[in-house]
Length: 214
Ligand SMILES: C[S@@+](CC[C@H](N)C(=O)[O-])C[C@H]1O[C@@H](n2cnc3c(N)ncnc32)[C@H](O)[C@@H]1O
Image: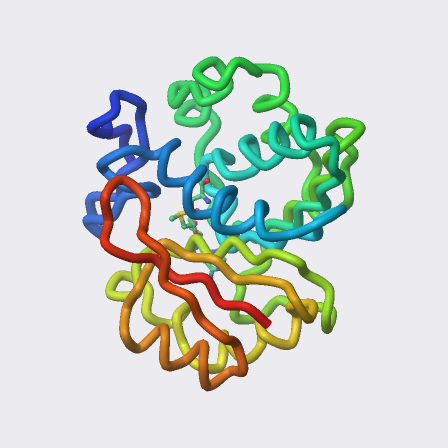
């Protein structure tokens, strides 16, 4: 894993063996805000139960924690991450400093795994090392699923119809699954699982992304 600069000047992580980055090369923060906050959290009223696929650098978690404070709502953030980012890279990536809250960013990374940790008045974090394929999820629990796996071509096993059926069961009625991808097979699998889909414009000028509504 190595740091890679995006077009907007902040860093993301790059995995040479997969030729894959953790965020859009055209802008990491703008992508996270657009796909997961604007097209995800903004669609939900009141307190929000989030499930995230891939904690990674913690950027989505940091933005969600800031969102909860700004919007005076409470977020429970359950995030899956079987492959932790080494701490020296987390420190170098500097999202805490860039987003004006180093203490919050450190707390998210330092939080104990496999248990609920109250990070702030508005934000409770539960990090688990379990893989999406094997984790057991409660039915009808989540208002918003941040589906932030590596791209379908890079990690196809996470974009299977079986996975989307499982996530549909775990989504509350009225809840949403949001992702940067707009692949045709993804859309067909989400519809087959029972979701209704929308394809708003994607982040950083991308033509479309996908929001699936239960
Ligand atoms: C695109 S990155 C996520 C970026 C992250 N949301 C962030 O804000 O930095 C995809 C993440 O999925 C994780 N991942 C890989 N295999 C997984 C699996 N089987 N289940 C859940 N997460 C997985 C990777 O380790 C990686 O952190």
